Image (cartoon, rainbow over all chains, first blue to last red; front, side, top):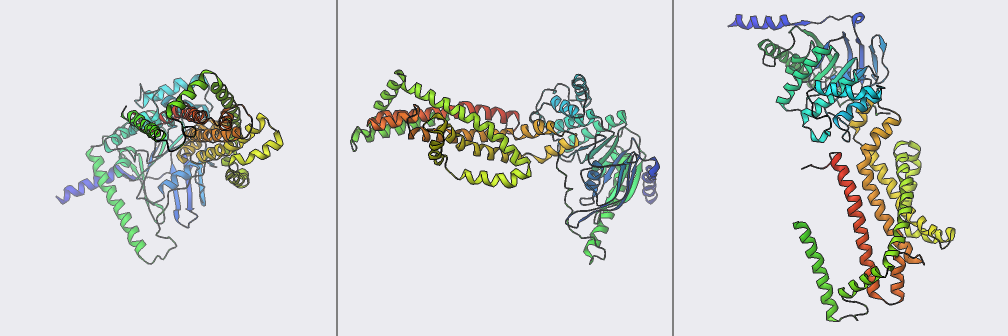
Length: 299
Length: 253
């Protein structure tokens, strides 16, 4: 009995190994990143993260661990108060065409059709008019939304809206795709379906993805790497590589084994943060709820 | 269908009550004519062309003034919502002037423009332009921040952002503002026309009063109600409903 448990423990450890990515090989490089909101909440403290090209990195952690803030800093929507973020060794200044942020909501333009949403985005990126329609239709097919090119967003279900949003993001073809809990508002069935879809697209395109989630199963289902974060102050506690071949099945035994293991780690992290916040805080980290990252309004 | 039946019932009840009061003879029939007399007067005015001519003149005036209001009000609203100077300095002035009933501009307008169409146009424009500007500003400010965020991450900026994202996102609100502006304009127009020889519907009312022709006064009032409701229902309601449906703001069946 004990041996069997130990064996399982070992197997999930074998599939989850600490990641060591040097800054020199990284596509995205985050070094000593600090962020403190105007209300003195420390969202990020001394965060280092290097992401190689073509990796699918999941930022995993309880709410308030700064994972969204980190993502928004990568997107350039949040200007961090300390440290540096660079892509291809170039420090970033604000949002750029090499990165695209996807939100929890599909955020389609409601007055444009599915195709119109994509061609509008392509126009903004300077794609010639002749190419736009064809490229839009290619990506609509890829997210299995064929036949809905001329539908308006309000005529689509939640999952279909998200697929249209994904098609728009992919059509723009950014080097890095940043996703902020994009499937968080979908029902369980649709979410699994979207995960499988995203995985098959990722396998085909090999895009660099940074994906924020608080769902352990989702992180291990999708990620080649899972970065565990802890709150108060927001920091990285584990950086694990997931050695499980793609495409993954949601019911896979090894996957669920890892989910249990990482879930345990996450509870540990949360428990520690909880007891720490109960003590008469020796550090300057306040135990106030961290707000959603504020976004710099558009042009 | 049921709704229409209920509406008709209420109108029929009102007319019945009117008929009843008129028959009781509390007031002289010269002061309170029966509904049928008013209807006859209305038909007579339509057939001899007085009403149609007056309505045409009034609506022509209204159209000119209203187009001017829209052309001034919508850009003004956009400026107030987008440029800090306009928001800080111009908006309070606009809000302040909005407190002034439009007809109060008439004495000034008469002095500036004389007894011309220009004076009425001025009053109508002053009556509706500020309302349109405020409604436009309101709806641009109320644009879903999610859409501005997604526009920024997609790299939509500059004129493409102003006309491709902000304006369409605010359009349902702007149309509601235009509808409101139209009803302000309609009121201002008739108030203005009442006060001097203008050849419009307002003047028909004045003439009716001067001739002690109460059926004519009432007939013109009925005509004003019918025209006002028709434009509101047929024109604005249709545009608004279609727009809201396309934007997905109403539940589609």
